[in-house]
Image 1: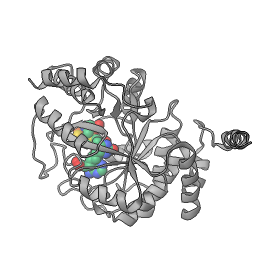
Image 2 (image 1 turned 180 degrees about the vertical axis):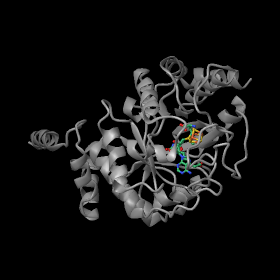
Image 3 (image 1 turned 60 degrees about the horizontal axis):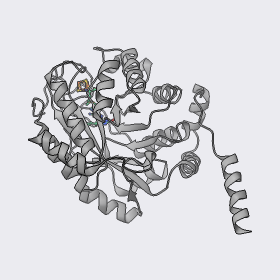
Length: 356
Ligand code: SAM
Ligand code: DTB
Ligand code: SF4
């Protein structure tokens, strides 16, 4: 009898589960985004519970493997060579340094390791071969490995996939309309082409944006419109609050309020129910209470560790203390594949080979 009831409940739940849509209109998104904030959070929290284990938050760690000296003009970025910032420029790190950092992050509880390079685009050179080694190594220790290296083509994406890349981060950053106010050295269409190459190679797409750059609500809605109408929704959607950095054109932008982050996160959660919605840059300035609102609104991923790429971020200890207070638990690696498929013994040998 109980079994029968469960079966009925299961079927019933399946029937009311919100469907995954790729045909959202701007008006629909605007109505969601502008709804009373507590209603918005309630709706997002409901969708969140349909698709994800609540209380589970993915812990990712970033490492800047090549810092500064970038030829691009992204107005928010401290790594653009043309702005006078305090960033400590360095060339591509040694593979051993990167693998040690990944192991340290894993020991601290991170399950995804994201390597960022201040490149405009990937080039077919020795540095790219080195990055492929890093990807093999990090994947070898059983972490979900992600890269953000700028634009790439189909062939480079296939090589990264072969090396074991799990996800590639390439943000839209903002709406198509506002984009030219922020970046002039490559186009919105270039971004979409890179996202397409990632998808074609069967690599998970990580794509989101930044709020607090002077954009309007319509621009935020426009960015979510583009992301949520992609043929395949991004596997993860980072929502960054601008970290204003001295020397960049956006250094004097006012900080975004927590309610703006909540609106973005909740709307992303409702539009893209299966995505990991990442509460990304900007946590350093947020209280535990602020972040709790973001988790209530459907965020289920964070970057942890004392630095993002170049700017400060809460360290692992601080985040684990927050998890304890909020009753959150870290999500395991490769959960969508039903657990880690790696042969750790074999991969241990691989890592030894890579770091000599
Ligand atoms: N160079 C590559 C690229 O642009 O694709 C990869 C690294 S880039 C730093 C990765 C992302 O970090 C950017 O697309 C942007 O969304 C985010 N980002 C950079 N500076 C930021 C800042 N000051 N505040 C918030 N997010 C930032
Ligand atoms: C993303 O959306 N945010 C991260 C990651 N993807 C690469 C980067 C945030 C960078 C914040 C500024 C910095 O630390 O340099
Ligand atoms: Fe270069 Fe990326 Fe920074 Fe733009 S965001 S300046 S491409 S490192």
